[in-house]
Length: 470
Length: 100
Image (cartoon, rainbow over all chains, first blue to last red; front, side, top):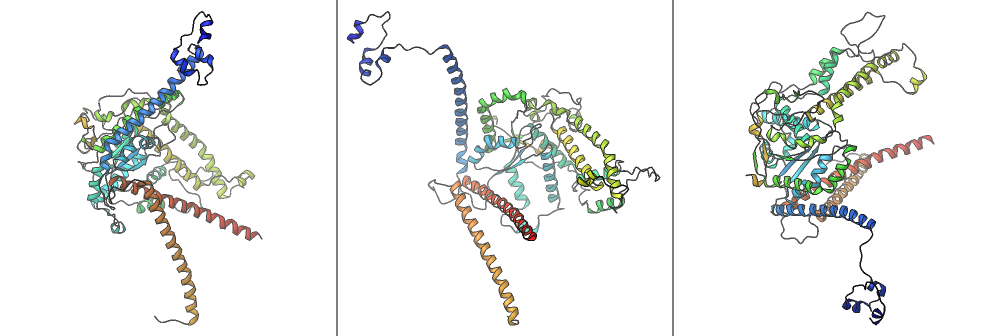
């Protein structure tokens, strides 16, 4: 301290005498004790503030996520404490997650469910069955098929097999129905809602017989001329597609085989005019950003996962408490909204979202995220179809020439044998099935398409609601 | 039961021993599978918690349901993969013998 008084300085460094006396023996270099604290340089300040903002926001977001999830789990935990006999089953819900249009990964909807909705359901001991839609329209097909089989069971046409009845866990149909009504259906995202409603309508409107799509297409192809004989020597036979000599079945024989093998029981049962009560529906908002231009928004979303946790947990909480109300869809004056297959808006243009359909407008804003380039899908399918049928005659001619022995195969053809006529037919069937499936699926789910609605659903469908809404 | 000639008795005896061996192996496999499943699912679903009472509550019951289903699925898948490997390997061995 005496050394300090002897040295004159322009600005004596402010120091607390007490602190200095305490610290001077601790081993800290003495020059440090005299220095005046100052801010780091401008560049350091910029760097530190930017880094700590980003880091801090991320950390805050994740902590909020954990807190919100823990809060909802605690609200729901008590429901899982209660005895359950070994062969008894607790409440079970069915989860549908359709493929988001434009996404190659069809599991994204179910991943959202597993991450944000499932923890609350697990805490509440609610069981679930997850079904993913592997292509656009998969959920529609699955739901329609399930309804058809259920209608057959109820009409008495089908019955559970004897083996099933002998299982200790067998539950008769009435019990299964009751369990389903107590359970519920979870739909993740608006495309799933559209596919589900389309499937419901198909299931409750179509007949009860089993319809093989391949048979339907094959009947259509019989009228087609693509596989006709083109022969200059023989007199042309106008409307009869003929098979190569290797294949001895005639087309009439094939048709007969098809009709006898198809099971037409139940085709005379008319669709019911009232639909029985369906399990209540939980609508879970979900959107999936696809594309390069969405990347900044994807990064912003990564910093804001707490909103997803909040909406997912809320949805799960609604499901667990099981308060329902009938679906609310305002009466439509015209019939154009009932038929979803042919929307009245112009194709290809982006129609603004309508706000009049009540509950069916669920998550309308998520459709803005669907890639606009997908609108070209029907046109692209037409293009590939045209190109395929252009190339088909020459491949067919090669196949027929090689099989009938009218010419010898070239060296290339011995090395890579070209497809035979049977293979060509099979390939055409496969392609047509895939094209039609894609187009139908897209038309169900595209942003302009309205959600299928049928007046019979008004009494049958219920929605899970927040407890506060009651 | 009337016994046939001595020779046929020996024949039926040798086949019986094979079948008995197969049955014993199968019983061992199934018992081992069951024991492992029970211990694995117990550790996952009930684990180190102090048991409050002897009955399974709903959460644990649902967890065990799922655990058993998963274990079954895994065992089936692994079995299928092993079988396809096993089917491929003897085919290769046979071709080696055939070339000799």
